[in-house]
Structure formats: structure tokens, C-alpha cells
Image 1: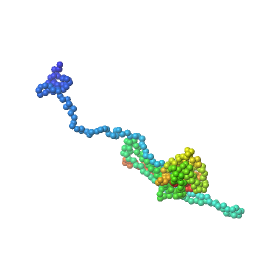
Image 2: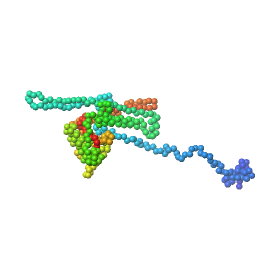
Image 3: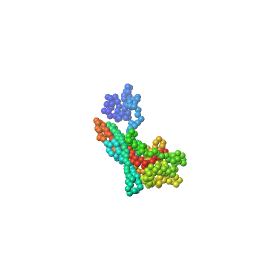
Image 4: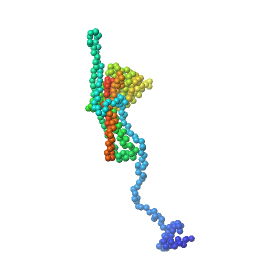
Length: 348
């Protein structure tokens, strides 16, 4: 049964509501009959895409940013640890003078009325020149904020880098000094004796790579023997010694004999107070070397590295939208108070 009012509205509009006839929209045909409307016309698509075809989302939305910063590995600074470190003067001092005194004297046969025999002293003054060096850090307001998006404290990282740069330079000057100045390193001080050569090994050559523990110990003993000669037999096997060598050479101290004893164990048995420490500077090309030195003779240190300024931070200068700061250090190099107290062996 059709509603009369609905039928009248349909007649005036020329359509039939879907609720009225089988839930399907209809239209009046030219012949007066009612026909179904093609509902597919409402879903006709465009012939091509208006937007670009895309297979996914922006890559950064699926990128993980690790909050932990990974710092690049650098070679260690070992000079101060090997030779000791001290401060000499201030950054205003350009020259250091180290007085040396040597006791002299001669005796004479006794006689009531003779006045022969005299005691005396001889002195000289060693000079060293300091070397001041600097580094700048500069950071901008925008670059700090941009780095902050990656969880990087840019200003702090620059300060860390400046300290590393200064200390790397200082370590270099401690080992090699500064060319053109009276500023020498622990490895090239002109007062050092020439390097000695290790003994030939049963496996061939003088290197430690295939040397037996006994052969390695023999090389260290030969160096200590030379120390005794240079110092006038002022040393004992129990004195505090330092054996400084390259990390590769240190590995060969683990060579063991048929009884399971390593070269390091045998060395420490003969020299109970020896200190073994490695640094990357004990190689030149493919030639490895070591230094054996006594730390003190009669209560006097034999060597020290020295500085006259350490990490002097100058004022921060502010510009329109940036800052900069200078940092300064100074080094005297390495000072061998007793050059005879060290022996270098090259070719291990």
C-alpha cells in the first residue's frame, strides 16, 4: 500500500523514492514506465591520479635516532704517565734555566806542613724554551639549536674537542719537542745516548715476534747492563725501572716457554720493581724500539715532562648571534735531568 502524499510528491518530481519501491531509485522513462537508475554513475573515477603515486611514508618517520653519542677512538696520551709531569713557571716565562752541579776534588798524601788536596764543585746551566699554543672554539646560536634536534650539545662538544686538541699537541711535544726551539722530547733529546741493537734471535732477525722469553729477557738485561755502565754502577736490580715500548712489542711479552712462563713474568722476576707501559710513539716506520730508564737516582728524578700553562681558558667573546673562546697551553717538552739514566734499544 502506497502512501497517498508520497505518491503525489513522486508524481510531481518525476521520481520514485527507493524506500517506496524495493529500495531501488527509479526514474520515469519516455514511454511512461518506471526504470531503475544506474547507481554506478555515482562512483565514476577520474581517468588518472591527481596526486603522485606513492609506495610509503617519508623515510625519516621510520628512522631511529640513538640518543647515545659514539665518539671516535683516538690514540692514547701516554707521555705524562711514562715520564711524569710537573709545572715549571707560568705562561709568561719563555726560558727556563736548570742549574747542574758536579762535585769535584782531589786528595794528597798527608804532611804536617803540606796544603795539597782540594774539594770543589763545577756547575753549568741548561736552558729550555717554552712553546705556547692555542685553539679557538666558535659556536653559533642557530647551529646549536640545529644540533640540539639530534640531541647533541654542540657547545659542550666543541669544548671537549678543544681540550683533546691541546692535550694531543702537548703529548706530541713531550715525546718530540718543538723544532727550532731549545725544546726537546723524551725520544729526541740531543743529550741522549745512541740506541743499542738487540741480539740476534734463533728464529732469525732481532725482532721479538718469534723470540723466546729467554731471548726477550736477554735484551732487557743488556739494556740494564748499559744503564749500569752509563750511571757508573749506581743502580740495583731492585730499583724502580720503567720499560716503555709499543703496544705491539708488549704483546710479545706474552710469549711463553715450555714451562708456561711468559717473558713478562721472567722480566718481573729479575727486576721486581719494573713498570711496563706501552705508547704508540715507540715505532718508526716498521722499526720498534723500547726505552729502559730508572725513575730516581739517589732520591733525584731522572726525567720529567713539564708545562708552564695547562688549559688556560680566555674570556668568552659574544657576537651578534655567536660566541668564541680561546684556550692556551704551554710546554717545555721533556727534561732529562740525568740523560745517562735511560737506554734505548731499537730493532725489537
